[in-house]
Length: 199
Image (cartoon, rainbow, N blue to C red):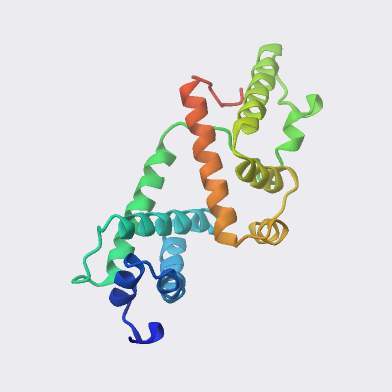
């Protein structure tokens, strides 16, 4: 059998489909720099690019496992198309009304303090307090690994690298957990018809 390092990307993809997880690791290492550079070039934001890169590879894995890759095409181009679609989905989401956004310093803990609520009417203060209460309730419903990464990122201001080191997982796993936490929070807000917009 051919050494995995000597295989083409197309052969590695098919080897992964046949159950060889090491083949996927090599595929990822060969393609990650070029793919990440492409995503970063398009979105101009490293954190967003990290999230979109993670989402792209989740979709790549799912499509490979579903048999949706044909080795007749070039693997790199196939992955770029998936990344492009992920980026376009992200842009569409950005055009919709925004949910709670982290302040520039990424510290949500200050938002919970009365003195830091936005100045304005009593009604605005009440709305803001209610939004923060709703967010905390929904965070408590997240699976523990997702809740943990949200807490470390927003309350402890840790980088994804620090979160990965602290929790003993890869940076990509940390990014994935954050992505799924945000998706879950948005879903819960929609299901419960909760408006997550500060007044």
